Image 1 (cartoon, one colour):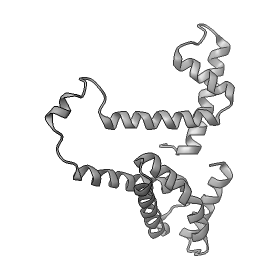
Image 2 (tube, helix red, strand yellow):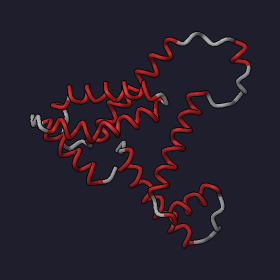
Image 3 (cartoon, one colour):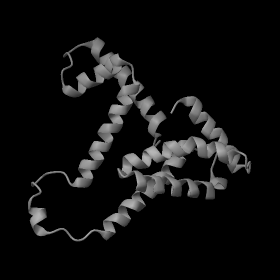
Image 4 (spheres, helix red, strand yellow):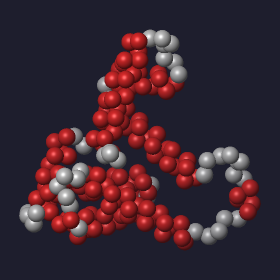
Length: 180
């Protein structure tokens, strides 16, 4: 999502909060694909994801009058989607049977839980997506730093890494919002 689209969503949701009914169509058309993709990545089931995204949009429209224009519209919408995804996962977890002790015995000691492994995979996928948005030189610099193959004592590399990290932070905030 580029800055123009984010600004348009911000404008449309602010208008909707102010009572402008004509903004419904634009808000839906812009947010629907974003929320559906977010839910699909989170739930890994297209049908459940579509239901979660639809419920998130319904709740967003229900609470549209509460939207504060100084808040980030995309982050606000994603919060609804995240809540719905969590609800779907909790509902599914409540239906699971207790695991058999034999199954538990096959899990290696010290291995991350399935939830931790899933979260790590999701973060890795999101980071790779953001790296793909950066300039090739920035992505190469960040990968070299992560791999530990950066030149020792290189002032040029440290400065390049500093700039690449700042661009990475900006790209992350534009894509995933900020907790600040």
